Length: 302
Image 1 (cartoon, rainbow, N blue to C red):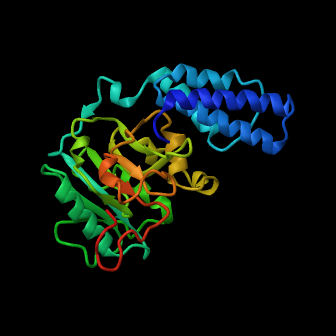
Image 2: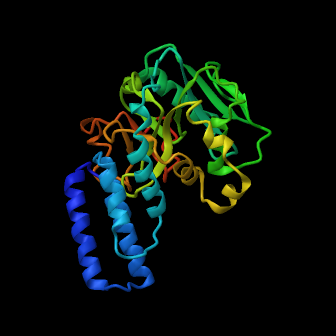
């Protein structure tokens, strides 16, 4: 969680060794899930330390057959990165240009009102230089400020988290090749210029406490990310919990943002509090478990 991957790797290796010694060669179901969870975190820590081959080897060499959430996807991520490397390191990856960028959000249903979109636009305008465009995918544009372009999604049949898949539809009326997406429960607290020059690819936020993606913040090239929409089927909707599961299954080898500029408040990152926020280096804070991040007086927690 703190980015100390070397220390985490050593701790997780010791935990696995102790678990194997304690549980023996035939662990019970819950014991196996525990071992699998530790193994997934060990592999993910190796990935985050940049050692992709080791990340795959620790899973391949594990002597027990265990199941755990995140383990299969983490293993696929390790193997993909080991064979292909990160998209940002490929010759065809293009640096993000703030003059050819669409900042996007999705508002569908009644969970979030137009004030969330308007505040998000204002925060991005304050903290991101350049001649970028702001787009809201919504079926209800009422109340949105004039600077927000609207892409109508009134005809979509998916709901909830899955609505984000409209971002990857090649038929959408997005002008730019590069898209910077922010959830509506996101607060911008610092300079967003860090995205300029990032080679894209596809950058996504990673959960600090679990080996999995978080789609609250994404930066992607539409051509590179096209498989997210093109490969999706109704069976994926039925068998997976949400878009984050599909993103990791479909695009296991993508980049993740560095931890410092993008943080998840607060239950996921106990060291993050409003009093010390300025000292963390955070530029974006997202609130996935607390959507009402704006009190009634209109001031954000940031």
